[in-house]
Figure 1 (spheres, helix red, strand yellow):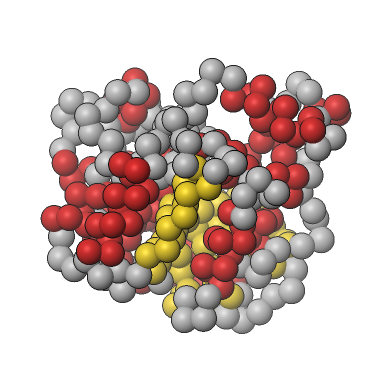
Figure 2 (tube, rainbow, N blue to C red):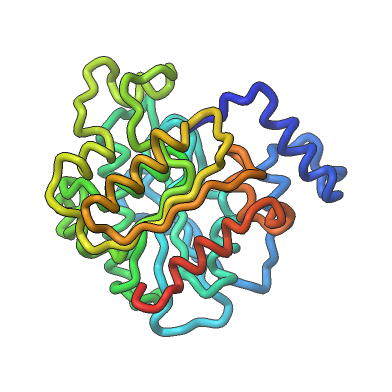
Length: 298
């Protein structure tokens, strides 16, 4: 989802300026500034892989430089209120996880207003199916397949695991996932206030089963997937108590193994930014996420 802070660009560039990385790129977006710091010796990239026939149905694969035969496999979905985003802007995420031995797929998906719910979830399911089917070729294990996302992308990641309609629609089951990780995810956001999100979810004709938390509370006992939930304690866009904490409590009540942490020194936006090398001192987001994905049995 989109940050409502009135000066997000200034805050990003201020942080990066303190680290001395903005003088060359003042005219660029903060994500491009961050991507300019990505190391090139930690990973290899297979760009522009098609998981479907449409222009937005493409993904990039980041593989560890030191390949193994049984690496974890993470399918990452970015945020942007289901109305903006580009996989190439999240090269820093792919590099960060690949540098920790995790094969990482960063997928585009169709956006509003071109489409609305559930088309973007159908795309995400196809991307997961592609990753599952190509795991061995990528040096990863199907048994260690995870969905991961930030903001709106965390919603997508959660729905792949919690609502069986999407993966069964492409010939998989939610049990194909070893787990999922959500960073600052919106899991319970009815009624909808933001105009972009209203359009994406056809508000007010938005049924309760569009919400990830609905599927935990109304469904059967949670499957055995492991779950990691991270958020900024002071997030002003996606309330962490209503979303991250409530999701953790609901999953725990259903018997799911959940790890949850709220960080103090990051915002909704810089939570994902802390994955990048210049900002890792803000919060141990990469350590928590990579440790979760690499855990024995994961």
